[in-house]
Amino acid sequence: LLIFLFCLSFFTSVVVLGQRELSSAPVSLSNVTDQFTFLCFKSLVTKDPYNVLSNWNSNISFYDWNGVSCSRGSQRVVALNLSEKALEGTLSPYISNLSFLQVLDLSNDNFHGHLLVDFSRLSLLEKFSINENNFEGLIPQTLTIVVVSKYYYHKITNSMAASQ
Image (tube, rainbow, N blue to C red; front, side):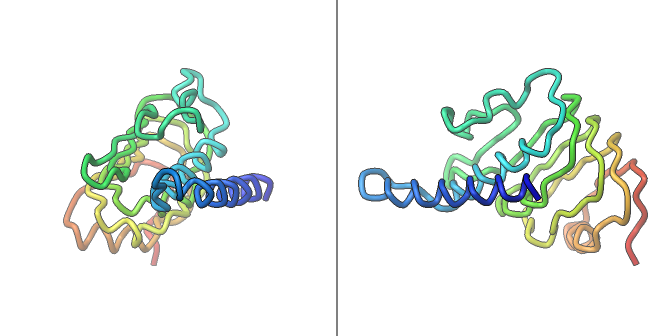
């Protein structure tokens, strides 16, 4: 609940500040959403032994954050690759807000808990890798829909079972 309140208050302040800046410099609400998503993601990471997320802050554009790749045209996030960084924590469901995401690679980290991402909102996702983590529970049905419609292979080696 505390993390949710933090994310909500951050999002509210970013939107309010972003609207104040609209007259002097264009601020895209979609970019604010992407930044909010990443800061919520970071807030759920409990261990970052290599300080990979140390530059994930409001002083640096998220285009330059470790593991984040953006498209040149739309300047939207197209890839998040944090594989083999020994990150530990739970995966934020706000990842579903990255509507331009094509690659999500969190393989060989230490994420755990349930996978609460709405994959139906990630219609451009082409590569999804979470192998060698500790997720549990059912594989979300929305992931199955995306996988079947895209005909791509993703590797899951966790304690997860297919949803009915």
